[in-house]
Image 1 (cartoon, rainbow, N blue to C red):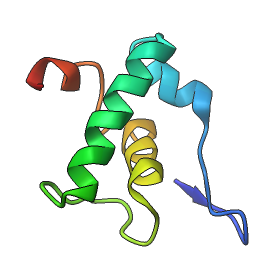
Image 2 (image 1 turned 135 degrees about the vertical axis):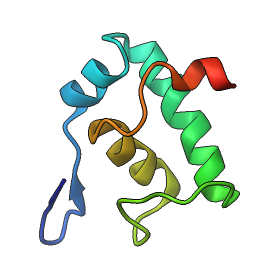
Image 3 (image 1 turned 90 degrees about the vertical axis):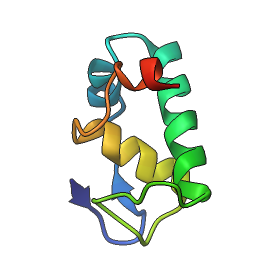
Image 4 (image 1 turned 90 degrees about the horizontal axis):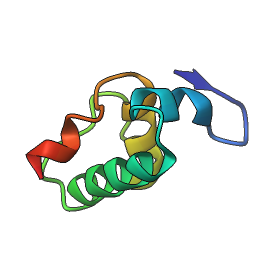
Length: 74
């Protein structure tokens, strides 16, 4: 995870797509489910607590904490 100065955390979208199985549509589904969990405080993000839920969800995906198998849980 790379944090930048004023623009917030650096999210590598290509890395996120890779972690989501190579499909951008699946990335959107995974990130939305994870963001909903974070905003409702069901499961906390291990990486960051200072950014909003969608960014935290993408950071979790980028770090490999969440992948395509996350869709099977829902």
